[in-house]
Image (cartoon, rainbow, N blue to C red; front, side, top):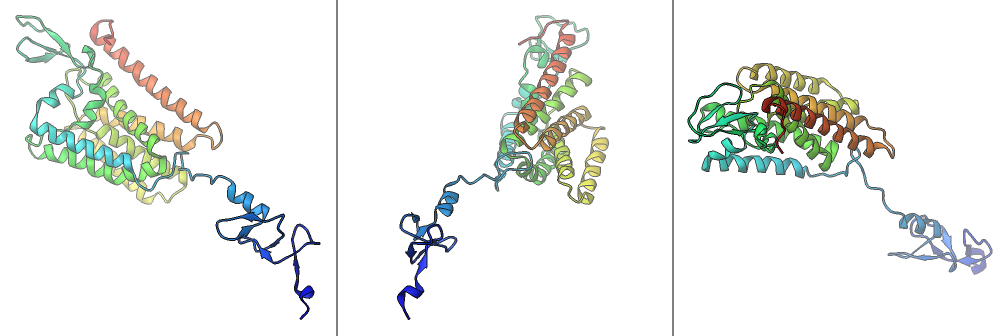
Length: 311
């Protein structure tokens, strides 16, 4: 067979004969059009496409996609480690539990912070009203002592089981940063509502407020995805039932505060516009929620202290 009859030409330069193909699209390319590739050569179009940056996959809320719920694992491990520390040093609970206001005498005895107390010696104010604002977050990593009967163990067990089951799902739907913010602001929301509505001398601990916030986000985000809601609705019904039942022996204010804060933030994260405004809307919603909680806490502390807000 004549060699000229089998000659092929460049797809960009029909007058130029060539025998080299692009390794991606298999079109013939002449020496002027060849682009060196890891294997063989490519045409200009394929080489340009290969040089374009790969767009990173994003979560429903616009966060970075991840296959490992690192934040959930860290929160779980940190809570368990703090619980073990409580066993060794029970005083940790007294120092970092959520307390609105209480008076402490010279001998360390605690008294209600909103009543008349007659004690020989100077009294000092403890709790959030005494400037210990950190209690509003640290209390979320504490739980009832294992020496307080069956509920002592059940308290942390229930919270950690729910965090393990739901946290891993919600974190992968939101991304690590957004999930961490949702967890912490839910915990803060629970503490603020407790500060506003509960007895200021009440001592409370537990991750329940944060966990209820994660539960609310679990529901909101599945609604956003248009998922089948049968299983999700059953879970939500069980969560609300537990909210009612546990009100007899736990801080229902903390549960409701966490539920409302987590649900509100999940709405902002899930339904923010999917364009360049998304991050601004989400950040604005988070900042707005934080300001709202801070103002509510400051007003309540001002009421407890007679007009001053300790820093």
